[in-house]
Image (cartoon, rainbow over all chains, first blue to last red; front, side, top):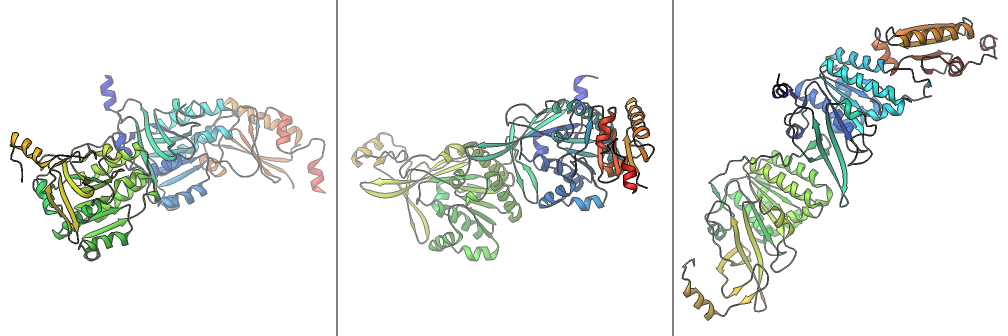
Length: 510
Length: 100
């Protein structure tokens, strides 16, 4: 048998843990043991429990949970918050505990180190056979080293357990402690040799923010995605891995145009946005970003589409009042069920949690349009990398569902300038619209330009616009002024401008 | 009757098992002067008992009676330590004292 053939024969077992099967290219190697190593608080126990829980819920596979640390009573209670009713599964013979946790009362007296872990192996085998288990979780190995005085015995025992698991053909997860996030794989330096596969969970403090990641370090003889992937732990759900770089850009692209809610803007964009495109609207505070998001939503509901607005900067009341000021009745739209407005402060949750909440809102409401006002607010609560991953994750999610998205971003300076948000995500978006203040002889005007429109011709002028009780009105291009985008204005005398224009008569005035 | 009730958990018929049993019998016969009841449980044959008793390693000796329950792990070679573990002082006549 060649090496390739042998690789081909290692099957994978879908864990059912959201996102994990994606980064592991289909799950854990079947019939093998995987070591899950992580520092304190890295959600090892949750993963060990979830591995069995998902098996029971999704694949009707039974599980044996070997606990060395927490008592079964504690585990049953702690895991209820994730919606896992272990006691019920025990009644149904779908879950069995092998309780090797430290017992209360006087510790045993050890005389010599002539003993073996035989009973533990036999109890695991007994439990597996009793219910016909396909999955085994052991949590955590470090605790056995603490319970027994001889690490030589434990090492030996672990090898025996690993080979017993292998001969039973069960797929197993063993957890182990690490003392540092980037160092040795596990504390006792033996665990990794017991398992064919190693997965590392991290809980890193980065710029004062906790960031959880999962990395598949090795899968002996099988392919997997490389690198760290962020994950989050969510009530009623457990671990959710966010497989960012594993996302494929395979969405179809549509030729259907949709209206922005501002007629002149549709004209500038060559007839409207594309059905499944993501539009970034960038501008300084007060340039009309919220108005664009509001119009985008209102237009959607007018044409019978479902619209979902995530607002991170203003309260519901403010948003609704603003909308009324532009002649848009959000109240009625929500009442009709065509619009849903979700407001929260970005500070209430980490970005991974935020992404999860937004995805479930989208899944529930099934909108045709999504607007986010503003992305910059979310950027505040995250690291640069975390933010970029968030935007990629969200964008690919909504594109996959063929939803039109409109994000707003706030530039830090009033005149000209770009925002960090923009710099990070401009390549991900299909269209970019810039809103800018323009100073003309001591007076502030507002200017708009379509910077990019993927797959379509568009108007390249910088046009003046005004806002009144009916929304946004786009007027003529600015003439006689340059440097608007940089904020370094220079004024060109009109005679000079006319002279230059006569030299290059392009005739692109519209 | 205030006997010592002892349970010895072992895994299969191995030299370690034989050694533990021989050592324990010696302690019992010489020191406990026959005032004991000994049950030997092979985990291979009774895995559920091992589970109920939460036995992790063998040999494990459990003193069921008199209370409190105590556990001694190892091959029981060191008689003095075994007696200490059983909380049995050879210079005091435990059994007679209790019978008073």
